[in-house]
Image 1 (cartoon, protein in one colour):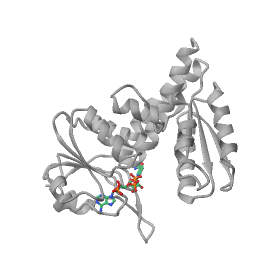
Image 2 (tube, rainbow, N blue to C red):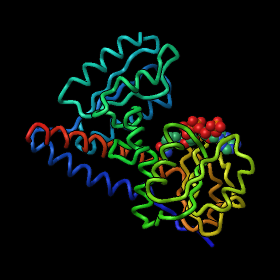
Image 3 (tube, rainbow, N blue to C red):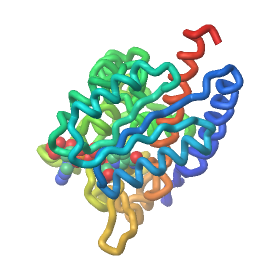
Image 4 (cartoon, rainbow, N blue to C red):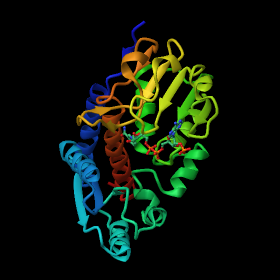
Amino acid sequence: MTARIIDGNALSARVRGEIAERATALTARGVQPCLAVILVGENPASAVYVRNKVSACEKAGIRSLRLDYPADVSPEVVMARLAELNADPSVHGILVQLPLPKQFDEAAVLEAISVTKDVDGFHAENVGRLSQNQEAFLPCTPHGVMKMFEAEGVDLAGVEAVVIGRSNIVGKPMAMLLTNAGATVTVCHSKTRDLNFHTRRADILVAAIGKPRFVTGDMVKPGATVIDVGINRLPDGKLCGDVDFESAKTVAGLITPVPGGVGPMTITMLLENTVISADRAARAAGK
Ligand code: NAP
């Protein structure tokens, strides 16, 4: 068997087209969606992520406000700017690129972003709302994975889903979204005994580990849907996922590649959240 490949680039292009139309319509109503992006320090990976986010905004007709601070900036300066952005009605989404330098309390910074502008979905209130299956800004990476299931017609009700990874940005919210959608979910991590026992019975297997080609074909149930969230840089500079694509694709039914799978969907969902926030602001202002 050779798995069908889920094309994250194609899905992302389609969804971004729809987002651009919504942004144009909002701008015509006098509310151009605007995302503020804060970058502290010179972490090269973070700089690339921020550049990609700002450029995706421009292409979708979303205004971006990029705010760069030196690595030794005092947290008070950034907190004061966050308060201004929270109060600015022309700003609809605020994102602080993580990780932050060690003088920052990351949780406190995330809490300082207004819940209504928390387009990354990391604020504790949005996380709580997600866990209660209430409307919330959803974290972009797992939300992008859910969009992929929807686009591919993957039925989640009653399926066995296994998520490897329990981080706050991917693993845990992924497990909550799958639970809310009716899957029976197992979350595995570095302390899990007999990981293969769990992965081999998964109808849906999501890998969010951060270890290149960790999930091999012998760990996959025949016909399973395999979602590779991992982005790992190899010594030769190439990118690879947490799944050994070559062996897994001979067993799986559906699989995401790296690059070109989950990655492009993450930024797409950030744009969508920004447009949703701008739409709410426009309605609240009677526009
Ligand atoms: P993370 O915070 O480092 O979490 C990794 C998780 O994997 C942890 O829960 C860890 O378990 C678990 N793990 C590590 N070794 C394991 C093992 N041998 N067996 C089972 N579980 C193991 O990473 P993250 O932020 O969730 O990111 C995961 C990957 O996704 C990374 O490659 C990252 O670059 C990528 N990523 C991609 C996107 C995207 O847009 N596509 C977005 C975010 C992240 P413990 O909790 O026990 O330590």
